Length: 184
Image (cartoon, rainbow, N blue to C red; front, side):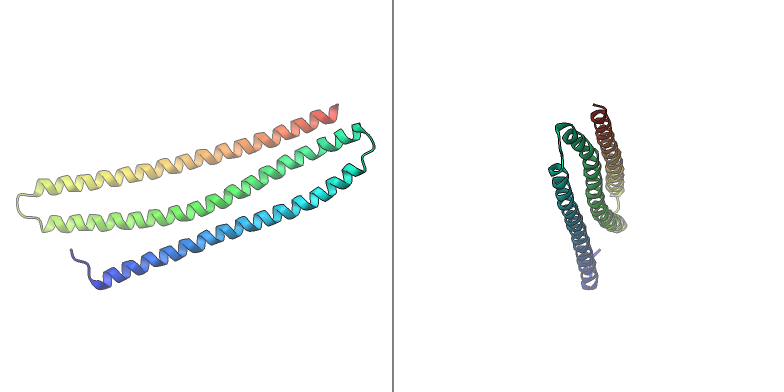
């Protein structure tokens, strides 16, 4: 199966379109990350000013402890929210790259199967066993690839569930600590 110049050009064009599409998605992810960090920095600066004003207006140690306790829970919640946004940005970009990879891998698999089928049709008499072994190897490789994709998806789902659990635990711990320090 010989490739024509038009087929090679079409493949190169498709590869370049994929490259530019992925580059665009990467820049979108960076833009979202910059936007998140600018927003978080503005909020942190504003909160630092408010906290400084509150600390300067404290009259005794008891009031200072109460102020400290009241600041702890919102800080934990904001940290969890920031981490969640960061995770969402990373997962979105990773998902786009994963989809592109899967599409290109499927395309390559189809091309390779077509090549094997073409070779099988043009194989000399008596080579049926070799052709069958080759087709079996291609099928096994495809099955292995699909299994890896499923395992990666499951691992990603587990990681997301663990991330959500850790975030919820951190926020709940902050609430408990704040409530306990207010009772003092």
